[in-house]
Amino acid sequence: MEALGRLEDLPEDYRVELAARNLVPLWPSLRAVLPPGVPARRTQAICWPYADIRPLLLQAGELTPIEKAERRVLVLANPGHGLEKMQASASIYLGMQLLLPGEWAPAHRHTPNAVRMIVEGEGAYTTVAGEKCVMSRGDLILTPTGLWHEHGHEGENPVVWLDVLDLPLLYYLEASYVTEGRAQTVANTAAERAYQRGGVVPSPLFARGAKPFPMLRYPWVEVRAALCALADSQPEIEAVQLAYINPETGADCQAILGYSALLLRPGETLALPARSPALVMHQIEGGTEVAIADQRFTLAEADTCCAPGYVGVTLANRSSEQPAFLFLADESPLHKKLGIYETRA
Ligand code: 1HN
Image 1 (cartoon, rainbow, N blue to C red):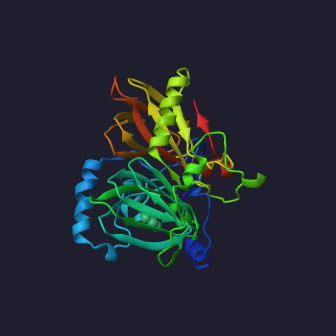
Image 2 (image 1 turned 90 degrees about the vertical axis):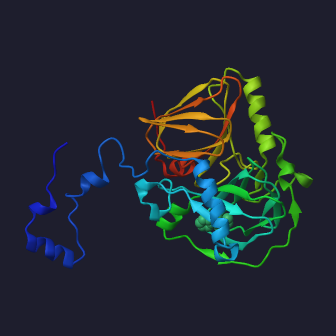
Image 3 (image 1 turned 135 degrees about the horizontal axis):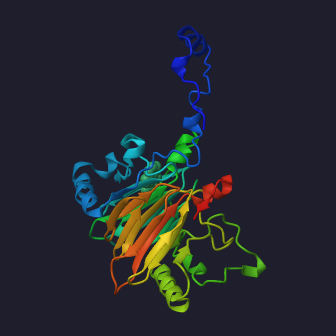
């Protein structure tokens, strides 16, 4: 590929003329915005061990009352993007949030989509659009775009969860904003039970539901049991992986980021192909050796790491006796909608 003319090759007075008219020559920057073969990526392969986060998050609980934080979160920031950008990848925001017994994080709704993966503690809940969603370790709770949500805690010990949002994308699109609200009235609890059996959905008087987000809580006990059943019943399957979907449509549960749970069989090593979207991995149970290009991370329970797009990722269960369970978040729904989704051998 031919080297192109540089900015310095142009006469100073010509460059000044251009800038004064808000004009820029393309050719000195063309290769940077359109590199050959593989995109430029700021996203670095990074690991955030929970053992590092936990004491600092508990310290935040002492330093900053909930009223002064609204959401008490330490953001898992990818240094490749600059820490101040608060992003894990181009489209993914990650944060660890702490709620202490008796605390309340007030109701609001916003354009970015969020999910929470519960990391530790019992007794906290999120109310989403009037539905009280109890938080237990490993549960996935959705707070999709535009739905009111608030968090409360009726238990005895700190509760911590991982927030995953498409905030960097919505912020980039200049479409990220919040609306403050008053405390919601709880209208129902455990509505997800209506969707708990695969293959059937509620159809009262022959009418199917029309809610865009019919299922808000995916309890870990159910997802774990489904993974174990899949591993037992289909030993030949290449990856024991379940996608979190909208049970009314079968589509990804949210429009921009995709979520799945993966079981690594005892002793299993799984090579994921290089794919265009960035990938976040969070250890729910067990331990995993992660290889991302020439980087190696050892994930213990509650650790989180991320890989840029267009690189292969290899996951190895550290145990030869027990399965390992991972929560995965990626940008594949977005890439598929944009028509840029790729897998490379
Ligand atoms: C948010 O609404 C929550 O509701 C957590 O718990 C983290 C990060 C950025 C923007 C909104 C929450 C968030 C957030």
